[in-house]
Length: 179
Image (cartoon, rainbow, N blue to C red):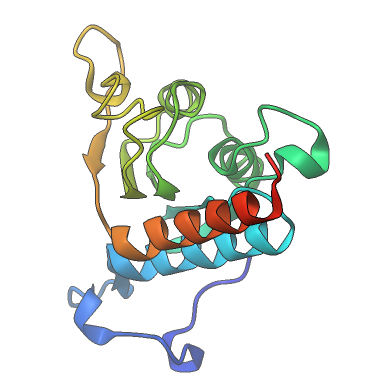
């Protein structure tokens, strides 16, 4: 993955970023969630449930993925799982301790488990998932004090856009009579 260059990004919003003297430009949660939404749009085009994820390490996007369950015939091919594998490869380490995961839909139990196992310290999600979410709805896996690793969680970032993408996708599927 290449470094992000705000000079060439027409959507760059300086209000959603900050910079300390002598440090690299740090981009805000909305910026990275927009990148995750871009990944989700690739899923929709591929007739996959439009969920996207990106992983950022020290201000640089090191992984980006979307759901690929249908394409790969793999029930574990969620955006988060693929992005975690990419990030571990990029850093040559399974411990993603200095990373933030941005995902358009609240993680499921499987993905929450992978987030904990990879030691990601911070997760930012867009849309809520009251039926299958494992972050702060059905379960609270990422903040469970009984576990040896916990995450800081920020929810609802660009939730309206993420929810609309999912709603539109499933509305279209129902209109076609598909599962």
